[in-house]
Structure formats: C-alpha cells, structure tokens
Length: 356
Image (cartoon, rainbow, N blue to C red; front, side, top):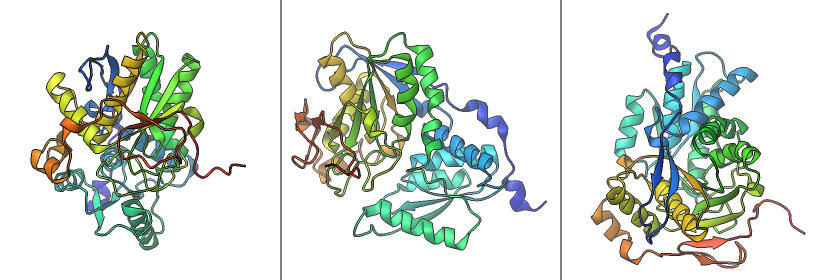
C-alpha cells in the first residue's frame, strides 16, 4: 500500500464524537433585557456543526455509488464546512480538496491544512455572484482535472439537511416544549434538516430565518458582505422557504454587538452567525414572553479574533456596537426596500419561484 493510500485510511473511531453538543440557557441582554432562550453549542462538537452534514453527504454518496472508497472529495467553502469535511474525510477515509477565497483567514487556512485538507484559493470575486461564484468556477476547474472526484454540492444536496436530523432528536430529548426556532441561513441545510422532525413533535412551531444584509437568499439584492457563514450571493436549493414564518436580516454592527455582549455576559459566544441568531432569538423571547425559544450557535469565537473582537477592524469598517439597532425595522415584502441593517419581514418568498 502506498504512503498516499495510508494517509487516507478511514478512522471510524472518530464517528462517535459527532454531535451530542451541550444546550445552554442564554439570558444576556441582547441588547435589551430578555427572559432567556436555549442555544445549541455546535462549536463544542468535533468537527463543528457542519461535520454533521459532511458525514451525511459522504455517506449518501457512498450508498449511491457516487464516491468510491478512498476517493477524493472537492468542495467550495468559506471555512466552516471545510472543517466538517476534514473531519468526515479522516473518519471515512477520503482526501479532501477545499476551494476557498482570499478572505479565508490565515489561521483557518493553517487549521484546514493541519487536518490534511488541500486548499485552492481564488484571489478575486466574480463580477456576478461574488466570492461564491468565483469559488464554484475554480471548483469546476478542479473537477475537470480530477474527473473521478466527488463534489458534495452543499447548496443543493438533500443529504446536507438530512445530516441535522440527529440534532433535531437531541433537541427533542433536551427540551420539554418548543415554540420558536431561530436558524441562520446559508446553504439552508441545518434549518431544513431541523424543521420537519421538530414540527412533527411540536406542530405549532414558528420558524424564523436569519439572513445577512446583502444576501440574495430571501429576495434582497446581492451585495458585498462582511459577514461570513450566513447569507449567499446565489440561491441554494436546500433552503426550505415554505418552512419559515418570517425572516430577519441582520447587519454586521448588530452581530458584533451581540457577539461581544455574549462574550462578556455568559462566556458563550461565536462568529457572525452566532451573533445574528442570538440577537433575533433574544428579540423573539422578549417579544413573545412565555414562549420557549431555541437556536443554534454554529461556531465559536476563535476565527473571529481579528475581526469581530478586534477594535481596529471594527473602526476600519465602521462597526460601532454603540450604534447597533435595538429592534428590527419591519418591511412588508423582501422587494419593498433594500435593507441596510436589522430588518424583519413576515412575507417569505423563494426568489426563483415563478409568481403570477
């Protein structure tokens, strides 16, 4: 057996480490006092939140014969799925090639390489579709070079959502009653994977999607975004639009403010997605007093020490937490106005759906 083959032997002993993350009660004012909500701390799981979907996607590909034992896996990532795929690659025995972009932090690049992943970095965003479109174009070039490699296509792969059914069962076993679920939306995977089993348990469950200002997912125009990990310049088909009762767009100043309040108030914090969902979950808990609210904190703070938690970075980008909105502006329809800060809309549309 070659040295390369030895490098990619499966290590199934990793798989029992997947999931079973803690559930924390968050009562920190965000920014106003609120009665508390539950947060699933995915940063404390091996491989992070997206290890769940990465393992599910590779196992699904095995079952369909799309991925050979020891085959190469190629995917586009802004970082979080990359960690998950590195975990899945080691557990299931696959070399992983990740296509990132110039905004991928040096520390994340080092971490991904330390886990055995190879990186392809694009240096410029595409004129249309930004960094995501540029990464997907490079990914297709890699697939042309490696025609036997497997592309999970996280944005459109139903196994992405299926990977979160286990998290749903964990929540069902941990919470007696759930009235409101707040989910960040990027690929659409974890929200789609949670909603169906949770609504079987609690049919009246309300679901709030949390997007980034400048994201096209829910019908706003695509713009350059500071926030990574949620939002998209494309329209992922894993997004379960009909599952959402409303959507909130959160700006970077609000996310920074929420993250810093979390770090000082309850020690549990994270990145852009964590700040955004924490803000909206606190709003939901405060607005509907007596309701049980839960959300998912996708990652921890470490990769954001040079951005969210860096005063110089925040000054450079005009992110003054003191000027962050304390409540959302309500708009009647996603196409009514382009939002620039925290906004709420109770009309949820699929931008690609043909309407009369």
